Amino acid sequence: MLVPIIVTFAITAVITSPIFFSIGSNHRKKIAQQELDSAELKAKKVIEEAEKDSERIKKDAVIEAKAETLKQKEEAEKEIVYRKNELKETERRINQRQDLLDKRFSIIEEKESSLTKKQKEIEKAESTLKEKEVEKQNELLRISKMTEQEAKKELMKNLEDEMKQEMAAYIIESQNKAKYEVEKKAKTMIAEAIQRCATDHTAEATVSVVNLPSDDMKGRIIGREGRNIKAIETLTGIDIIIDDTPDVIVLSSFDPIRREVARIAIERLMTDGRIHPGKIEEMVEKAKVEVANTIKDEGERALYETGVINLHPDLVQLLGKLRYRTSYGQNVLNHSIEVAHIAGLLASELGLDVTFVKRAGLLHDIGKSVDHEAEGTHVELGVEILKKYKESDKVINAVAAHHGDVEPQTLEAILVQAADTVSAARPGARKETVSTYIKRLQKLEEICNGYKGVDKSYAIQAGREVRIIVKPEEIDDAGAVLMARNIASQIEKEMNYPGQVKVNVIRETRAIETAK
Image (cartoon, rainbow, N blue to C red; front, side):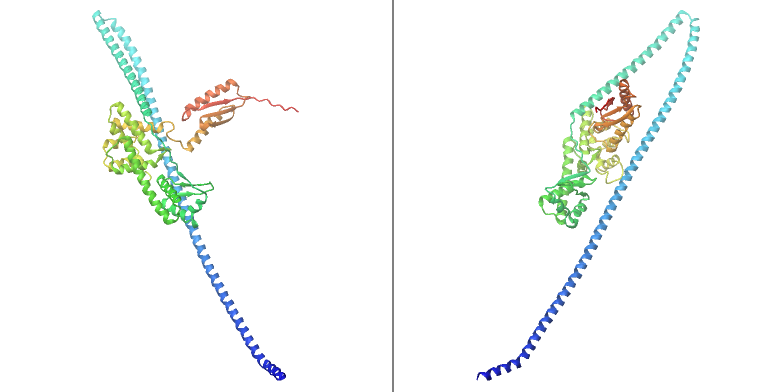
């Protein structure tokens, strides 16, 4: 019974084993085919992704190249503008020097003409003296033949002539004395006016420094691929300089109003914390509104401080713009206020129209508020502005004459001219340029080095002192004293300088020996 079952099971196994083998083989083929299809699909995906990455990299490279090209173009345009401005400035200086040379040549011609005229007068006087000498001799001959009565008449006539000469001399002396007193009084009045007038002078530079809470803020201001910094520079028209200086960035522009707008906008962006092109545009617009309000407030402050009334609103706005304008480091708005005060004090001393002279003094530099927008000098532009807003002819003449371009028609115009000179010329009101400062130092050393026996010379303390080291074998102690005197005299004759220059001549003899 067991044997047939085993045989039957064996036969069944033999019959079914090829079937199961075939089924298993087909199953493995299907699995292998599926894995092959999956691998091909993955390969296709990898190829497609590689192609997409390649296209993206190409697009990024093109965008980056375009951005670099645009940046180089902008830099080239800025360089061109800078060079043009430099050329204009050079041309202006050349024209100024030419005008100065023409004036000097004219003065020399006038002096030559005056000398020639005086020479002729001297020759004429010598000829007249000879004639008078001959006349006296003839007169003596005539008197010797005169009667007593005729002699008395002649004597009275001579006495009368002598009295006339004495009276003329007395009148001239009195006039000179009066002139001296008037000049003395004028100087006293100007000094008192300056002492009674006190205004601040803030010097605005061509750059503004913005303090950052941390160096990380620099990256946020630059933004991704520089989009934030480009947006700020485009909207404000200024250059942002970001260097290794910790916790600060520098805003550079020759237009102080644009710098102020950019400074306020950046500070507000840092306070807000959201820095992106949309927010930047919003903050810049708000900053422009704030600066415009400040300009208006500054113009009204100037009117309040000087007591000037009934001024056109547009002129008030132009006055406020002078808050952001400087001349040789002197704030133009504060300078205008100071001129108005000084001119008003002088006018009150002389009994003139104080209100009018203050108005003219406040408006005398109004042209500087638009001189970067239009052609012409600030005097010409100021006159055009005042004519446009129907200011009086006297005010216009005072503004036109404050630099001597036209003749002043009133005493008040002369006072405005004097007050402008006083405000600008007093020590410390204005800063001299670096080039002028360097030239003065070089001239000081050049004068010192021109003397025989000088070994070295140094201009120190910003040109307030010059130290000369002389060769002791060529210059003795007495010669050193004489050299200091001569150099000081030459500096006084040949140079213009603020304050005093101390001349220090050093003569030193050293004996050095080494003990071995």
